Image 1 (cartoon, one colour):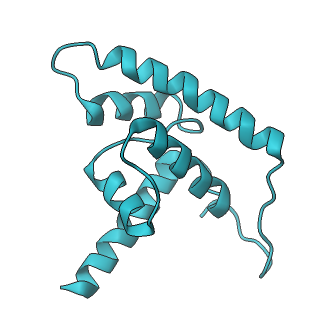
Image 2 (cartoon, one colour):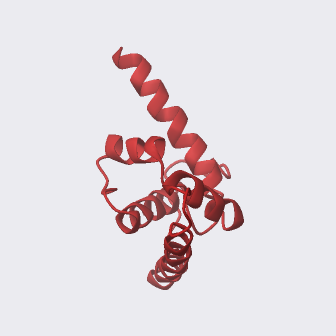
Length: 117
């Protein structure tokens, strides 16, 4: 992921930092919901665009990312629940941004799927 850490070291997030991230995510969710009103744009396109402009604050919401959260047993049924869960995972892993996290989770789920088949 982003940086190497000593064994056993977990990044600590203050409650204020987590609240700030959640507040930014809420604003990005509203932006995505506005864009979803444009005919022809779906979740994948809209959330992908928002993530590209705000990679530190918003994650793409598509079949692969929902599958990753399901695999991890995290809530992902709504865009709001998904963004909250993915934000927590990002903080826990210390991901540089949601682009990196999306790629990491995609590869983990793919590898797990190959083992199961």
